[in-house]
Amino acid sequence: MFNPVYDKMKNKPEEFYGDSAYDTYEVRDRLEKDGVKANIPVNPRNGRRQIAYDEEGYRVMRSAIERFNAWLKTFRRAIIRYERIAIMFQAIITFTCIIIHMRYGI
Image (cartoon, rainbow, N blue to C red):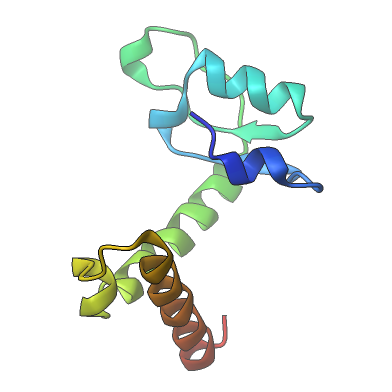
């Protein structure tokens, strides 16, 4: 479930914001083991009781991510993925992020 890059990180994040799709025991246990606070709303399909999380922080982060994804979609080459080699695709995404950062100052 977790990306190998996450395992190699020396400094883990203090908080993790994820949507209700990440509401699994595996994810919550792994984050707790690493000392990361999970801000994940409970998925109603799991049938569990609501677990407290930072709703305001979740709302702000979710909005920022949705805006970034919308900006990313304006770069056709990055979205359609013409490159077949993963490292080339990663380079295009990185270059796109640099352009977005320069344009919007994020």
